[in-house]
Image (cartoon, rainbow, N blue to C red):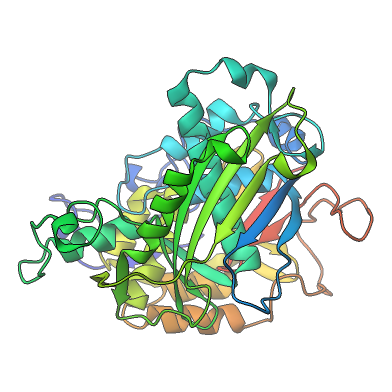
Length: 422
């Protein structure tokens, strides 16, 4: 089993524990702060029912000339992979007691049309009140934003921007501390108009992203909301990381149609992605690559119900891991060794072994560089696996060249892996 050493645990809680942390992998005697705390496990049958492929049109606007992506294109992904993206994207990196991402999955796993094809809500969604519709669309939009950042925008790490902005604005020496930003020609008060995410791509360049969402036709996200999204990504300037030279500020607007809708082809469920130019006098926000990377993995740990471990990681209290103890909780996915962190009812979540060791094996200083090297080891996900597997993922059925078959195990660009127990 996996064991950790912890420095000064009593400084995190005013209580005393042994110097060695028990198993991170879920077992019956782990203390509460390293045991998965997902409120409900979605049964394996439900995950299997969500394996069908859904389609969403993506529309690129204001992109630089000559960009490789088509202005209109269709993405196809398993619905359950979208729900995992929703869960990670909406999990808090800093609040160990926030389990709302799992609450959303438990409530809405069955809120989508149960057939392959264009992503649609069930017909009963038309009867939801406006607040329920808003929360649902916002969270699904954030999941699609994360999926597109990972799979189309070369993004590896996604962290919530709010913590970094709040920390910077709270510093006594910050010129914007306590001031009305609107009166300074900026937007909102004390960073109210802030983006959702700070991201790092595979070259460690930064990207700022904001997500909007609504149920209905593309016009359901109003022109005012779309303009606000552009301002939100233009309103800040992360210092300590370099923005990439193009597609550095991305505003996403997701609209989802209902099961009974009969829209025109270009008015169906879609995500529009806008690349606005930077704004004048943005708010400087301190962002270190190491903190951004740690926060991105803490979102994943929180989604797994391991918020206590995320707290320890952010506090720098996880000192080392005994690598030889990983074999008992290692699976094979796309030719890569994956250390399983939690079994959440029909799906196991984990990290590529090299990433796991880099994340938990040393201090936080330099962790972004170490994680980058770890992700390069063994090649990108998807390489053929010639080794004997202890765990055989479900073999996908063959389909045509453009439409993937019902999805099986996968590894995200950051080394996060999902293994479906089917």
